[in-house]
Image (cartoon, rainbow, N blue to C red; front, side, top):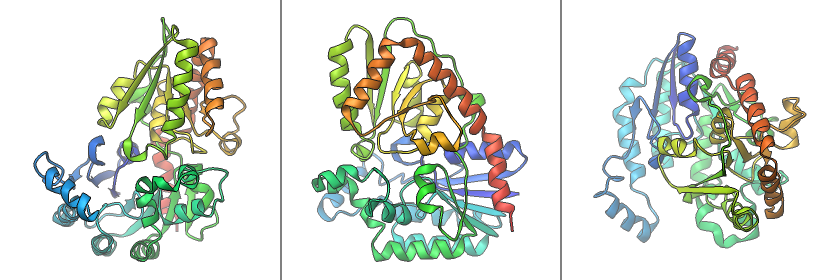
Length: 378
């Protein structure tokens, strides 16, 4: 089959592409690379002018004056220029309801072309969209990435884009997408729980991880190395302030035993290279399941502080930890970090279980097969 994957925010579509190709299918990814992360794509919609050093100057000025990002228009133009290469695919998958990342009007116009010129389309839910936002706003989960905003509404700037999903212009986009896709797929429990009763929901399919490329051995020589990667755009949503407070306490308690690496807003390749020597990776707090960064780190035998709630443990029939369930509580984070530092053999044990879990449940070829089963079902 010929398969078109629209959008890329985490390497999910890149790993799925490798799995599908291994099964003999032709796959094309069209996306903008997700800004500074610069993920690989086949057809690029990257805003080469407005995100260049020169173009970024007027872009920032305009944004500060009227809160409008001109790069959104450039994404639309560059996507439009690729439309002739986006025809006659058997399957199209959108990474979310707004995979082109342009203005809702242009998004609807371009997606109409996609739906018209291809056979079957599916929506992947692996991040925030209108259904997920409604679920979080109604405070249905025990906690969510909305918690920092609920506690401090002054954080509205970081949450503006989330509330955008509830506006009429985005509801029109959601309606268009939902009317034209044959089904919705969730990538983990954070999206499965809000979607499980949706009439068009098809399956929870775990993130595909290209195991052969990234599995490595974890060894502890002297210091225990803790890695914290910061994305300023999701600083509070990921719970970074809680991690930072926990690290300050850990520095005082275990200064001689640890090394801390902190990086901020760097490309994906550089990010992964820097955490390769780490033993512990601090990923996110407000989650029930692991996102893509966490899974890749687990495949490398890292102990990852991320979502690993009881729903996740029960679904996969796990009786021992494959990751640390990072709760939104500084004392809990400190206790878990201290235990690992004081018991380094547990870092090795959890790391081995993490690798085995990824190999069993997230093998990119097997996961690609699960997508094919959903896509080809009547």
